[in-house]
Image (cartoon, one colour):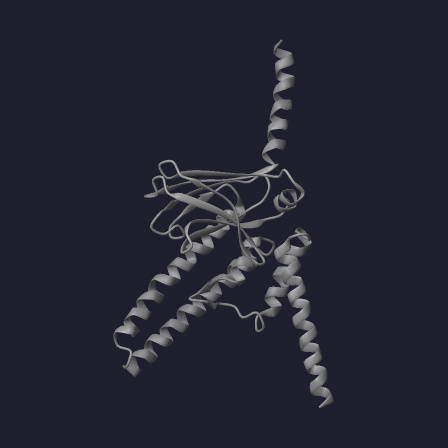
Length: 252
């Protein structure tokens, strides 16, 4: 009887693991949220696509994404960005793929500030990016308030601008190092497009070679990823347009 049990146990564990790989779980606890509504959306190339919503129980939520159709299976096969929201202005984005069980601890006052995440390397890396951006934003916001309080003081404005540009350059160097350390991670793709007040730290044109390298690395690992496919098309279009401009200039 014991021998039969020892044979059945690994089989049950195998079946359980196969089942777990067929879905994504994004679970967490949000302090101060009580029974508020929380929404889960998939970030597509066209923007957020709502997937599910629920009422939390004492700040706890659990979303399960089952790969029960072709689109869901394709989505689970590659790292995708998922956004959880308490409101349109209070959101947090993580990365997950099939088999991941993401665990998040955050605060309802601001989901993205000081949250803790575990469950996959990509999700942890996203947490590091958000933490680094928060470290940048705090003094940047202070500089903006200082400038707003004395907007007609030209010398102060120049000093603030110089300090701000130094901070921007420092954070950009951090992002470059992050990308170099994680060349084949989707989080590096996100790092390239990180922004503050609608200003991106990298320029798609000026930093195109870096973007090209990120896209090339990820395409080898995730050739069917829609973000990477879209970016590959955009890069090819930019290259073609530049070639046409150069050809036109040579003609002129």
